[in-house]
Length: 145
Image: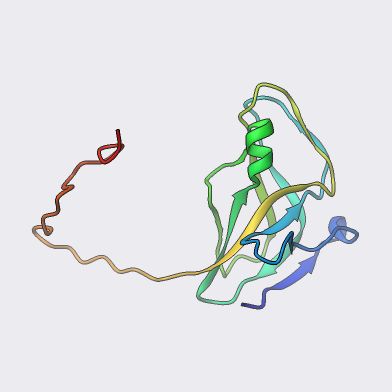
């Protein structure tokens, strides 16, 4: 468990904080701080009404809610989105309507999930050759049907 500081913004003062819907949920539900209609094919960075301070060494991933994705074709673009530990602006959720009908987002409605996660830093080392594997350079479905 990590502690994440949260600052409510004026347009989010009466909204619930991100919260787990059940004891074993992986993501904290986050709600919209604005009302709007997303037409099919449209995308929008939806306000949440808060900013956060994530501890160094962690990120918060923004993920779609499965029910909205299945029932309405609503998804989070760049999934999972990453909120870096040095970002202090308003958390916004980039939603896209991939469905065939307009979708109304109502202020206070759950729209995405936030999942805190540790971050491992990587360093690239340039080499002349890579080790051989059974898969080799096969990708984009090469291990499936």
